[in-house]
Image (cartoon, rainbow, N blue to C red; front, side, top):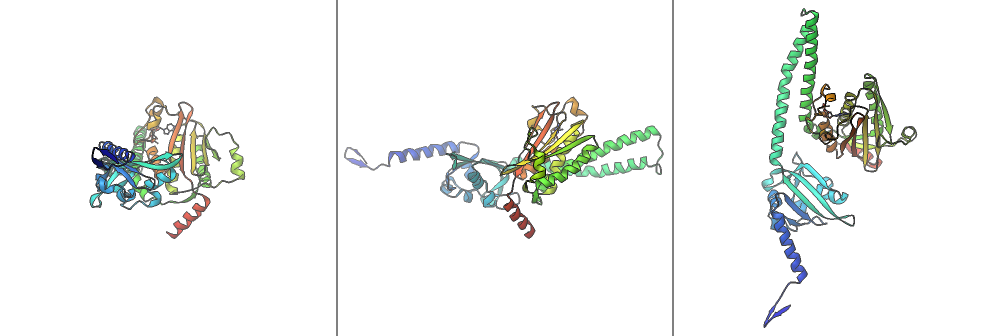
Length: 405
Ligand code: ADP
């Protein structure tokens, strides 16, 4: 209490005053930002929310303050299903103490309208423990709309092209059949070339259709418990047959986290058979490995391709190393983008659509893994991917749950 002359004035303690004005000036800064921002304490209670975040959630900044963040920022997936607690980014960022970023969720706004968002939850660590978190929300509704329009266009166009392509292929077959057409050698040669080009075109449209359907495919992903070391071993035998056709060979290494690993992984694979369980759709995973292997073959002339697998407690890591042409450093950050192809004299004659690696990235990220590549031009490339590992107990529980489903 302070005395001003005769008047006695009641005051708030100075530290509380500075805290309140600090919060007010922070709120001012928050409100001036273009993104939605929410500051959440360790109990998940909103301490500050700016106007953009409040607007997206359909609340006012005043009403949302001191409320559980999951109550205000209601997250749903692409099928409008509420995100369960165990995969809620607010919870996982806090528990794992790692940043969580996603563009696959929407926020339920006013009148339960779903707005697609780019969400980042940054846990703030104090002495290694998650303390508070800072949540950044971007409205990406127009970006998603544009993306969907493009997807629809590509999907319709590639679908429509299939009928005329099939018809041209049919007529080329008729032209090549001595029972239905007469051709001299030169004519036959031209038609055979046209048939090859047509087949390539048909594959390209197939791939295009495949990537535009990739998101839907992932949504209907049919995950199962897979023991990766034995599944990959079996798969490598098939890949070996593909490699032999090109006079190349395949080596399989269990317990090897990188191609430079010199430990005796072979004896490890013979004596101890480690169990690397994951939960994913076997068809989608084999499509990824197939694509990486296909590229390894396509971009190599000779030599040996190595397929390796290793794991720590949290992740399984697979790599595919080739002795091929390699990828220039400046192109490496872009190769997983849709339609991106490295344009050099050595790649120009090799066919492709630039869609395969994008499919691999989408699939691996869908299963919460990572994919990347390392390469030296003229020496070869190594593609790595990780995927969350299940413990033996989890594998058992998940298998039972899948059977019961
Ligand atoms: P595609 O192979 O159909 O062109 P991808 O998306 O699979 O499309 O690959 C994109 C580009 O990345 C390729 O065009 C090629 O330039 C480069 N690339 C991919 N894998 C390899 C590899 N193993 N070795 C060298 N370059 C590669």
